[in-house]
Image (cartoon, rainbow, N blue to C red; front, side, top):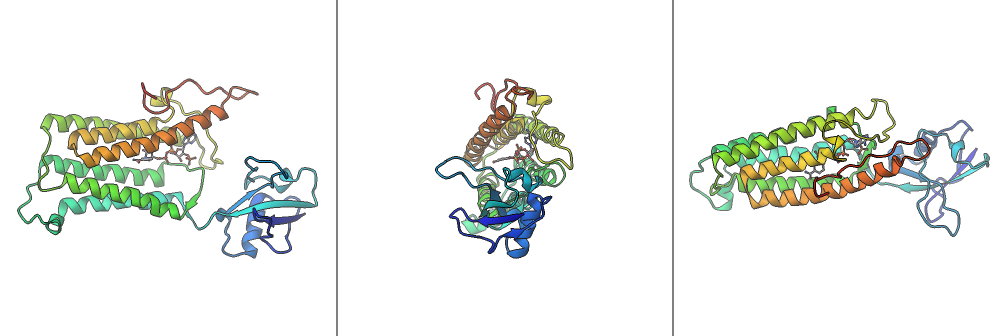
Length: 310
Ligand SMILES: NC(=O)c1ccc[n+]([C@@H]2O[C@H](COP(=O)([O-])OP(=O)(O)OC[C@H]3O[C@@H](n4cnc5c(N)ncnc54)[C@H](OP(=O)(O)O)[C@@H]3O)[C@@H](O)[C@H]2O)c1
């Protein structure tokens, strides 16, 4: 079978096309492209079917496990594929590791080292107990996230564009330093003991619940699975589609009740709006996948992220 690989503008990407046998899969095609053009390793390649002339909409994306014949539409001699270079990729684990490593390292610098001298505060710095508990709480949170990245999550996409590393690190590292600066500041005024206990107590319960939600999500996929989506159920998932985001948001609320800084509340608002957008998209996807037609289960009625509001 001859496979012609063209760009979206119609230019031939692999000169002269590729000759593959009829049992070849999309993954074989990706490897054949990589063999001819060294920089285009498989995860950089997005392969789609050409849209019929004059039509608009989303093209069919080729799945790497499927055989090429599946996309031939009767013509087994010649197949034209549209190629898009997704740019340099990194694994999701690398992306998450670097974005969480920043806050885990930067926060303790503000607690342990005399950084405030560089901001013009030369006097002695008295450390309040709440600042110490905040350090433990913060480090536990980001350590947990790194551990979950490597040992809990089963990602559907193996890679992400390299540019996301810079974008996500800028978000987490900047907010981490911003909050650390104010919570550890020599002029920081702690909240009452009772308020700190309520905030941290609630926050720890939410962090543990968030961990349990991630275990439930992990169990929706088998280790060698193809990354498909299932209806999450059990614990808070019986009520909320994105219970992992709900518990994440509430644990930051607990953190802010205990520490009470403007920086922390700004982060809470930004993180909530990001997770709400993602939750709406995930809820829509699950409702579409599980529409109750042709034997498919129907997605149950649930809150999206923040009951009783959404
Ligand atoms: N503070 C913040 O700004 C912020 C923002 C975002 C996330 N977070 C935290 O980071 C955690 C991970 O974030 P995330 O966005 O990667 O979480 P996520 O996508 O909701 O889920 C975590 C893992 O479970 C999988 N999964 C989700 N729904 C599934 C379903 N219905 N069936 C099968 N597998 C499913 C996901 O697969 P896919 O690989 O297919 O997605 C992913 O591998 C969050 O839960 C939250 O605690 C914090």
